[in-house]
Length: 587
Image 1 (cartoon, rainbow, N blue to C red):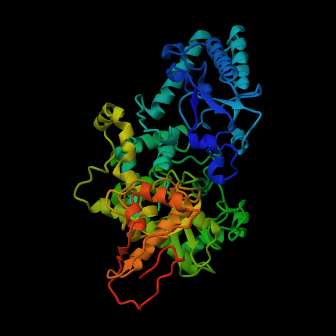
Image 2 (image 1 turned 90 degrees about the vertical axis):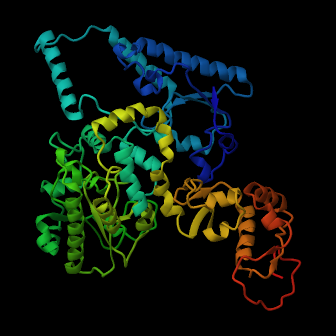
Image 3 (image 1 turned 60 degrees about the vertical axis):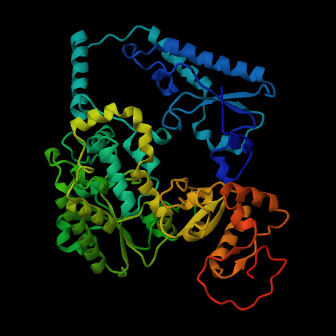
């Protein structure tokens, strides 16, 4: 039996958006897991499906195990005390799970919290798992249908063809070694988990290094796209309807968007290489809507178009892999990748210059793989004079074209490209030997760089306990050396990596106490060096919490004990009588 985090249990009935996703689902909520760590038990999705050759058990034995899980959970609820007889048992099926090991939710259904409704879409009753396993166990007892086409020889031939097809598409020894951030089992999920923001040179550079150095190279990414049906065996993007890859279909000419024929002419000579695409009409119409239904879905500006390439080789599907695919595997190299990006820029600006209504303020952005919604190239062309709420909603992933071009040019001109070359067979073997150290890779420099855009620079917007603070890093660094507050705001530190729903750094501190402390530090930064500043005198209602937080942050001596000389530029201040009412004053 396992428990949730203490703070998640305490806030089980909170309707605050901060807790509704994280809190326990009931006043009494526990988890049951198994001591058998064979992978067949990591999630009910695969119960009874793993072959005996791989150490799996039959469906009948899997059913018995699931029934034992139910019995153990109910036994616990009966014996622990304090629980009612209204017990709910649920699992989260793989794909909707956030931990890749077995856990059965045990809930006291007499007192459910908001989190239960929030997660209702994925709470699959354990009884439903048992029901399906029983159906499969019964089916296994029935005689198999007699084959009418080829008998045993035909069956063996079909299996051999299937194995050959799988081997030709994915290779005989496919390598996958993800650290598994938040349960990630794909390159895409791993990039999002470790790099929640990709919008500047540091984060884009870091994402490319992560793929080439840690995630198996472009070959692993290609396998993922193959398995998902986005690439055909020849390495070109697919243009069918499953999956429906909109920009690849338009580029290939198998699909035409109404009214866009005329707009192709605005590309001039670039129309031979690129295609202009539009958003859905309703998304264009709601570009300035603040309605939750449209923010994140509507166009990012009053004028918003996409430009895609007619070359459907998979190396151009996303900016993440531009120039990284080896020439031996059909890649064009960084030089041609730079040429493509420059041509895209020229094509976009030619289009906006000749298309009616566009201003001269044009923004060009990519969404880097992981944060993309379509697996084919699409450059966002945006009129920055009329931006809508969706632009700011996606600010964390709007990576400017010039940033991509800058990084490609850096890579092309560097004297040593060892850190960026695609992983070789020898490197794969080395990676296998280093799998035990994979967890250590989650804190590499590329991870740190991926967040620098949100915590770099001197002015930061930080969510502290649900309240937004705009802070100067230099003011926060007035905190003494080795203090927690100074450590948090040191640029190379990882403590601002947690993000709220709006992709702002989040600190789980009491906001009222934090505001009093940082306001005093702001005054200290403003006060000339030749003048003393009286210590912070918090209101009586807040005094205990302020003193405790200041002690934890390591700034109690700085803000609470005795006058401190100002840290600002030395200048003469007019005489001023100190006020006893003010919590802090300049004397």
